Amino acid sequence: ELAAIGRRVCEAEYDLLDLVLDDGGAASTDAPDKSPSPAPLEGAGGLHGRPTAAELVEAVRGHLAEEVAPGLEGSARFHTRVAAHALEVVERELRLGPAQQDAHASRLAAIGFADDVALARAIRSDGLDDRPDVDAAVRASVVDRLRVANPRWLHPPDA
Image (cartoon, rainbow, N blue to C red; front, side):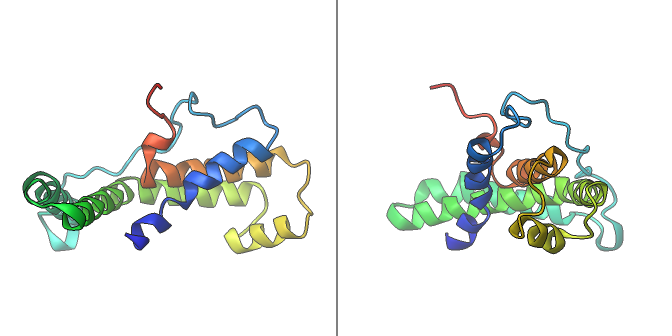
């Protein structure tokens, strides 16, 4: 459960960016998904063949969520559902991660940083005030993490 929670930190990051940045919600929940196309799940599977890692994860997640969890009660049922949700995150990362990583590297290069550590140091030193390009790059990275960790956070159900 704690490992799964760690991946959801981007939910708080997203909400904080909405509060802190004065960019009119550049990547608001209404913004179209401009993320790169996901890698296909199908195919020969490369070196390891079929089923691919994504297909194995999907099969195990489906089994846990649809076959195992309904027959359990209490904390066993809850933790089985958490495990199934964690596998959903892995599925999305396997599909979206490579393209997102490339886009992230391009965003960092466009604003003049080699990696996240260099960007974080510059932000901490207060040397990036009034840089809408940096704000947009940080927001886009958080949105990409949300698309993997919990895409529903970007499009909450109507109340």
